[in-house]
Image (cartoon, rainbow, N blue to C red; front, side, top):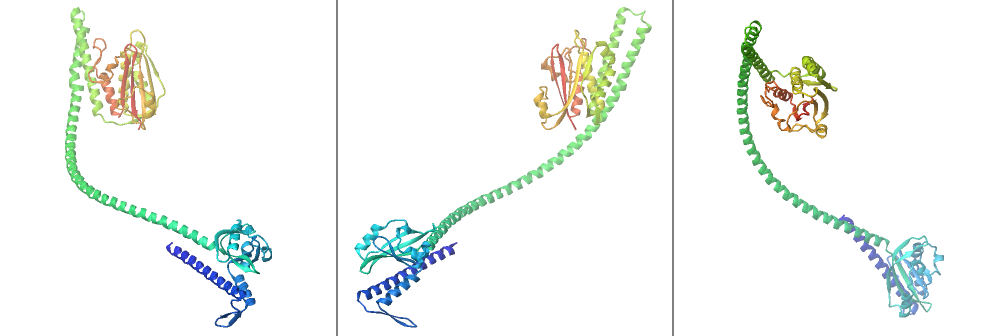
Length: 495
């Protein structure tokens, strides 16, 4: 870029020197001709390497014209009215007209401005004054050329006329524009270079800061590595503790299995004998027993029956913890139909209506889920209102957690995952209901809202239901209103 600017400057200087040389030659020729014409000299001798020429007034005028014709600048002679008396071929080419059509025209028709005042001033003041001005020369084709107009006076046939030289400034103007453009580009590049240097300095500072940060991070990394080693040691210790606890848990499970065996055999055997012998006494010795004795034996049988039910419920609850969890795709409708068959006598006795919707297969532990439905339907039948037959509604649907959040109010407090799909099962009844403040309480082990005289039971049924739902990684909620009924909502993730 710098090289191009230097070349333009050198070209401009060269053109200026050529123009000055031509002006000098023109002035010398004019002076020589004027000297010959005025009689100051009779002739002018010009010597070169090849020849010696003697110029008289006639030959000098001819030489002057040849010089003018061969100039690379436009030359015109005008009178006081601005009429062109003479022009050279270069000027004719500038205005794109033949020589014969240029002579006799007004100069202002080509330069577009009236300089009559300046011309009159020059003609009246004499040859000592020179007029220079940059103007635009208009050709007949509509094109324009920037030119330097130089005018001075001389005598022609005893009359003052104006000699005008028009120097084409196109290349000079172009060079000036190029120089201006290159200068602007250079300034722009300089600004960019300054900006880049500033950016480089800024990046250098950032790099220094980053290096300091890297050193700090390296120190932190070493610190974290040491902490990680300690954490790994702690993890190994915890794994050992976990294995120890797992071994203890296996032992506890074996002990629990032994307890289950004792509960199912050794504890229930005396109860069966109590029931058997008390029933035999009531049957065989019925007439010999007093009414008080008969009532006492019936109480013995009731207590034994409740104890047996209590042991069975405890076994069921413990079995939900230790049993092997094998999930299978199971039809919910089939499970509900099996439960309905088991409770057929109670359903008929209470005149209950069990309304079921559309069901589909879900991935559950079949025997546990059957126990869950048995407990919930049994509860709905047990806590039926005395003034109306039980009406139980069981529905199910599959939706994403985000859809359930917007459409249901009975959601678990921990919330559902928006993107996870859930199977939602609801069991609603029109029984005696419960106070909403007990919605969490009723799921506790041995928790009862009524006495055993009002409603028989052990208080373990809903605890078993909750445990089974948790075994399926699900949630269960309960809502109720006194004398209007209860509702249980179960949410199981679909695998």
